Image 1 (cartoon, rainbow, N blue to C red):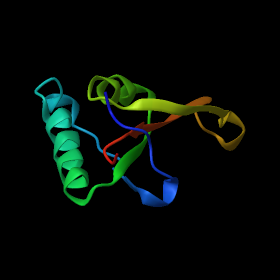
Image 2 (image 1 turned 60 degrees about the vertical axis):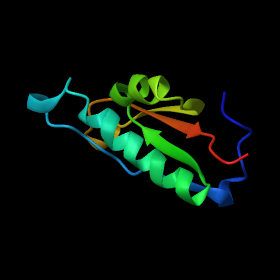
Image 3 (image 1 turned 45 degrees about the vertical axis):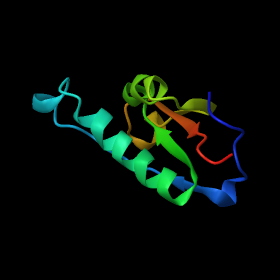
Length: 94
């Protein structure tokens, strides 16, 4: 179990990542996130990500928690409609 989360000021963000469909299912995304978590542990900062729906399962498996979910409709701006994001956190600092 991870410790309590620190205030937002003392967190770092893992930026967006994507794996080409031809290379999915090989553990690449897991290795990339694990590498980021390793670096965050070195400096003692909790981590947050803004995840798209397809990435939520990966982050959950690695110990992230959903703090907030947001669903928007971008169809009026020419988008496909529903846009989902999850703010997810991983507590490192204790």
